[in-house]
Length: 190
Image (cartoon, rainbow, N blue to C red; front, side, top):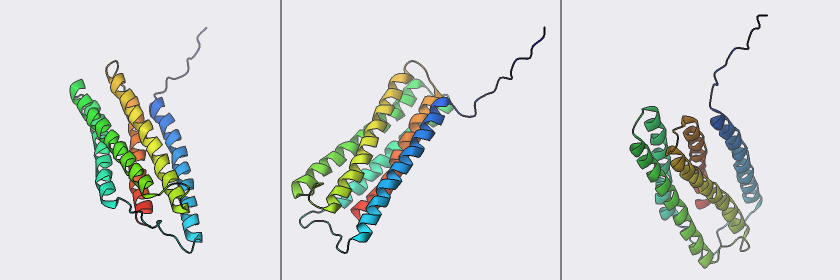
C-alpha cells in the first residue's frame, strides 16, 4: 500500500519569536492601558502639578535614555553578528555591552527613585506620584526581565547559537527600549 505523507512545511518564523511577539502584543496593551489611565486622570484634574519641592531629574534621565538606546543598538548588533557568522567572542562582546548598558539604565533609574522619595514624592503623596511610580515601576520590571533574558541568551550562546532565541530577546528588549521615550516624554514633561 502506498500512502502519501503530509508535506513538510518550513516555519515562517521560529517558535521562540512567535511566542515573544504574542507576549509583547499583550504588553503593548498593558502599557496602553496604563498610559490611557494616566492621560484620563491628568485630563480630569484642573490642577495637575508636581508636588512642591520635587524636581524631576530631566537632564540625567535624558542621558540615561541615551544609555538605554545604546543597549538596544548593542542587541541589534548581536543579531546582525549572528546572521553574519561572526565569532562567538564578538557576539558575546556586543551582548555584554547591551547587558551592561541596560543594567546601568536600571541602576540610574533606581538612584533617581531614591532621590525622588527623599524629596517626598511617593505613591501616597499625590496622584502624580502614584501615576509616576506605577508607570516607571512597570517599565523597570520589564527592563529587569529584559536584562534577565539577555543574561539567559549570553549563557545559551555558550551551548548553542539559536537565531530564534536571539530574535525573541531582541523583540522584548526593543519593546522595552521603544516604550521608554514615550514614558519619559509623558511623565518628565507634565
